[in-house]
Image 1 (cartoon, rainbow, N blue to C red):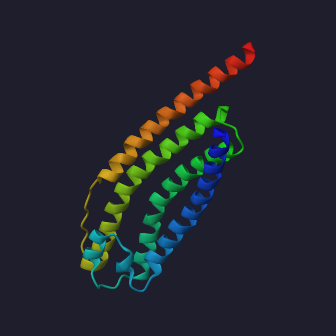
Image 2 (tube, rainbow, N blue to C red; image 1 turned 180 degrees about the horizontal axis):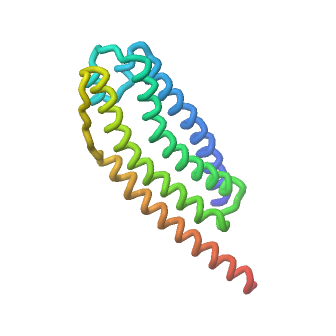
Image 3 (cartoon, helix red, strand yellow; image 1 turned 90 degrees about the vertical axis):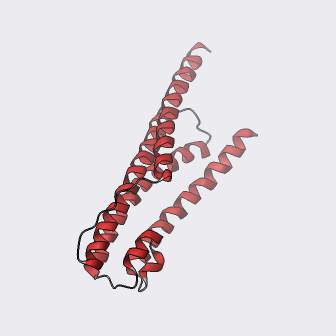
Length: 175
């Protein structure tokens, strides 16, 4: 019965991951192609831009910067998608599971770092586009710090899953 719940939840999460991939990519495209892009920007960046128009070149550069955290998120979500695929098939302890959890954790770590880089680079690009001078703001939000902490914890979970697989393999040999 518990296995059935895990299978259903895993399949649901796989669909959610696919929807998130499409949604985040759609938002990224809309953010930099929208006529009134300020409505799509984070509040601190929106205040920096105001009603100024931003050239197509700057918009393309900003879209490129947007791909940095998206790539990290997609890396993490791809690992989670594969974990859920295995769980959906009823495969709990596999050799690959520990590797995938460590990849998921690494993706979360990369996402935490990419988010900090994203804000700094966008701030620099938009300040240059609007004010004609380069202003760089560097910051690390608590959400970024949480991503780093959870990323480390998920990597440890990968190590635990490796040990669980090893113990299961030993038990299978005894029986």
